[in-house]
Length: 112
Length: 112
DNA sequence: TCCTTAATTAATGGTATACTTAAATATACG
DNA sequence: CGTATATTTAAGTATACCATTAATTAAGGA
Image (tube, rainbow over all chains, first blue to last red; front, side, top):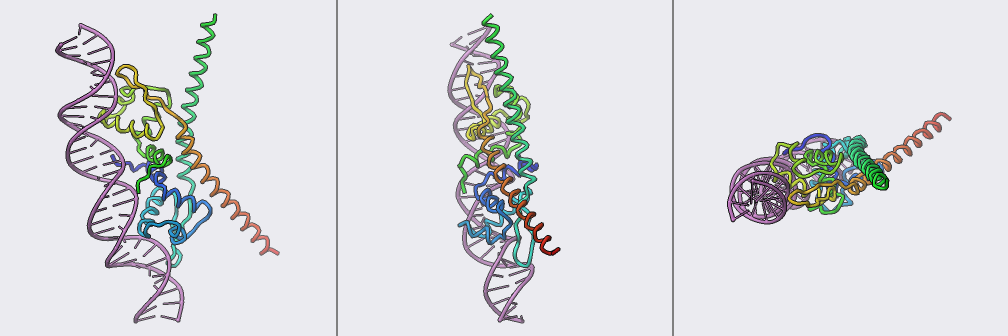
């Protein structure tokens, strides 16, 4: 199955350590491709491909200025990812709380 | 590059819509493989492989009871994912706030 | 024991990822 | 204009991912 929905693109983009490192760098402020690339041992084309993935997920924006591309981080996709995660964590916890409540009342009944 | 670190496994597991759907179902409460599978059109082995991915990421636990396997959701990996996302969102926002502050003071200086 | 049900493993195939080197593009600058 | 610099595109390769069907394992019930 080809997963092209937004959330899938975001999570897939975050699933690679190199791309997470790039985002870590960019979370400190915008930078050019070269500035980012010099922290990695992989080739420039490899970086370029990672940037394409990040861009497709909406996690970065590239703006051309002369022959330099400035990379800027965008947080909307992180918001989306976070929203999904938090929603499910919350739902599970609610269920878990309800279960505890249930077990508690069961114990009470048994005591009677 | 082979990404076997915990965070990569978690994000990769969340990158597939079928797996997110499985988690959505399980966030409402534990269920057997069969109960989960009947909501999907894909084959049982496909489900089984997705479950393996979710388990490897620590997102579910399988406990055998007779020939049924009960699937239980675990939230620790969601905590980890959330922590990464929130950290980077926060850092970017801090940087952004600092920039705004800077621009504000620049404008003040210009006014003088 | 034989059959049914639940789920996994094995084998396979198509497509996507993540890298590489070589070539192309685009801008600045002497 | 010619050359250096920054980055992307193209082409090729190895491996990983997601699905399939067929076979296997394991437990319960007639």
